[in-house]
Length: 145
Image (cartoon, rainbow, N blue to C red; front, side, top):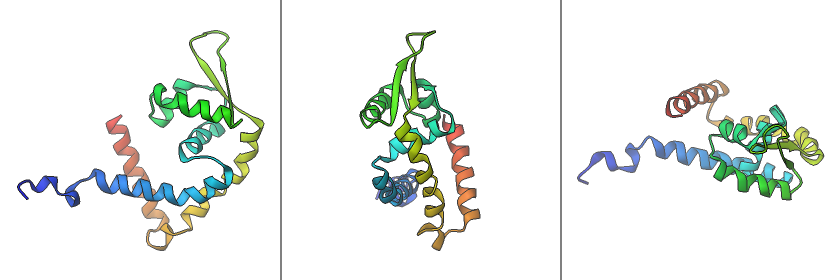
């Protein structure tokens, strides 16, 4: 190979990408029980933390542009997880609110993080190591945002 820097094993992005996909796969059985996808779960996490947010506020939290998040929110509205309405003070803003169905899902969803932390990953990575990785990844996210 002419360029050592082009080897897959020398890429920083690949292990982040691969681990992200594999971790999301660990979530999938629990999300399937709730009838939601991982991106929908992320939106719900944001709204369970603080309900009645604008599309842009949710997008900022998830580092997604409105043209990416709007179709996701429309599908969630179709599943009766959220409602969308225009802000009375500013018609350009769309307010997203949790429905009763989504609020009722919160308790079941609250079991997912602990289940994952004590699952497959815990067999080879300590909780402290996971928290250190999370801290480092958050630093990278902040630097790149």
